[in-house]
Image (cartoon, rainbow, N blue to C red; front, side, top):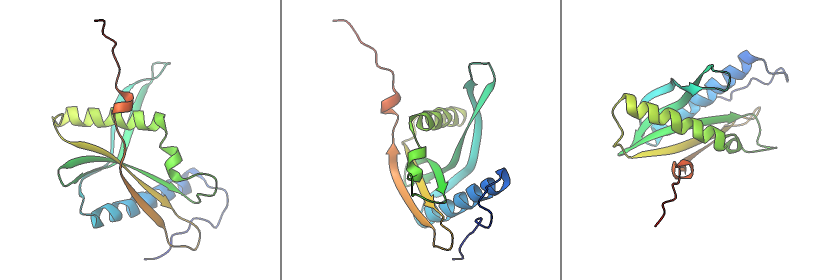
Length: 154
């Protein structure tokens, strides 16, 4: 596999950052295909609500695929280094909540509410002049942390 480099200029532009992310998503796709996932779609986008100013907020899921009987919603995080933090650090609670909202919309749109689901993450580190480091984290997070709890009186 050839090495990928966008490092000629230390100042990333929107275009080089987008290319970097696209390359990461391509490598992630290749990885999950090797793991026998069956890909349903990539870069699924849908409106998930409105922000405080009333503007429509759109959420995105990088990859949606089946792993055996599980419908998997897969977030891909690509970084040029993990010196300061792992790519996984970017899959914080806010990001997890957004992914869950989009996944719920996807399941509602396609009538898949009864499907067994899982939230996976593919972490990539693409260092200059090195082989990509790719890790797949199955079931990285779940919905239980975001479920509303109701207290009932006896």
